[in-house]
Image (cartoon, rainbow, N blue to C red):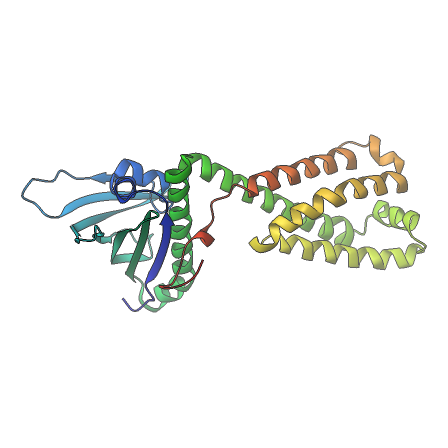
Length: 304
């Protein structure tokens, strides 16, 4: 296992028994862990130390990866610390993971429980698999950290993982929509088509003549395309939403001043901008309650 191990740690303000139950019970585990769609324990005889299980992960509608796992036992120290060791893998070629090992550790303390994991895995397909893993491994680490924060919020605040994930994916759907809208508006009517209405509105709102406005429209289109790319940067998304809440009313008024007739056109600037303005407000409301991978430590001793 030549790759760098994935490490994730989070503080959960509740007793160790509850954290243990929510992560060791397969029906509870599969609800919060983004890496698994279902986890099924196989029948275990009383004298057996190893608990075997099967899991599946939906890659996309109609496509899933299934695999096997072994919980190789747990032990508890006098301090109350618990550890669960895992061995997992899959034979499906769709998965870049061939086989891996790791552990979960639960450390009780006065304020609650430190819950952490470290795992590593072998990839298939040799050199090509290692190249793919350079992209896949960070995604796995991020997915693990996000899942840990979802678990934390479930235990501490009682909010179900399903609700949290709906909010999370709704927020990013809104961000991708804004990215598409700004990219399309910059590329098609401004840079590619140089639509006469765009040029006309600019000449009405500025001292530019038609030739100057034609050039300016291209640069405005490029700026909008760059703005579209900014929506793909998580650190900027909240600020972009706040900006849009402020500027959309001004953009709407400017369009109406420059070309009043656009207000009566099908799918006009009023309906578009008001819709995007309301979506910006909804996005801000969703953002305040998003689960985040940033709540976790990704290295030992790292400060959050």
